[in-house]
Image (cartoon, rainbow, N blue to C red; front, side, top):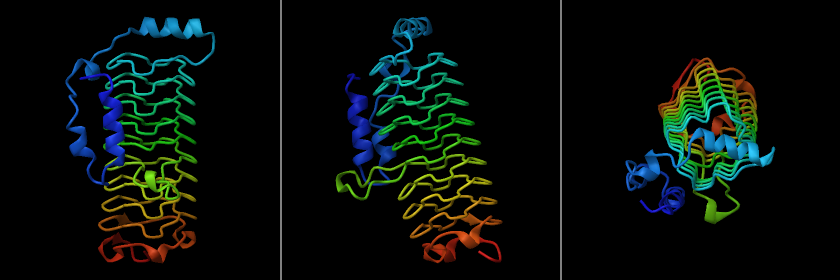
Length: 266
């Protein structure tokens, strides 16, 4: 695979129709060295960090698949278009890092700090982000099948930008993501894809969900105080034992309510 291919594919993926991500992903040679091998060692990365003397390091477009980078200080690092599939970043600090159009398929980011990280065009399918802190980050990319249980996503910015029509289809894709017990207070997930997401006991206080797709999602026990449900598709969604439902915004403006699984008062 040519080194430019990940960049081009990520751009195509986000500009495509809402349900075309999987077909485009299949167009990549996921078995190539660019996607499965590392051109550096952990020692190489540690040497770069030491030499930078506290300044952000540049790992843009590097092949880092499968590498153990756990616990490293990668704060503000430039990892744009880098390939970190199956890499171990457990407990690493990626706060403020540039992860745009990077690949993190099946990567382990459990307990990692990604506060304010730029994730435009990221591909992180089946990644482990359990307990990670993604507060104020911008995950405009594909997280299908990822584990975000217990993660902190406060003030996350994953909604589509409807003011910019050229970017109108670019949104967070959280299809089948495990968000059990996650804290999404104040997050913007407007027009995002959350089909079959597990939001059991999640904190959705003041979350913008306007126009998003929650079909088949499980919101059992979730807190929805102040959450915006205008034009949210809840077909097949489990809306049981919700907390703060009385203060949710535009609750009556949900779509496909008759197809939702609800409690007596929902």
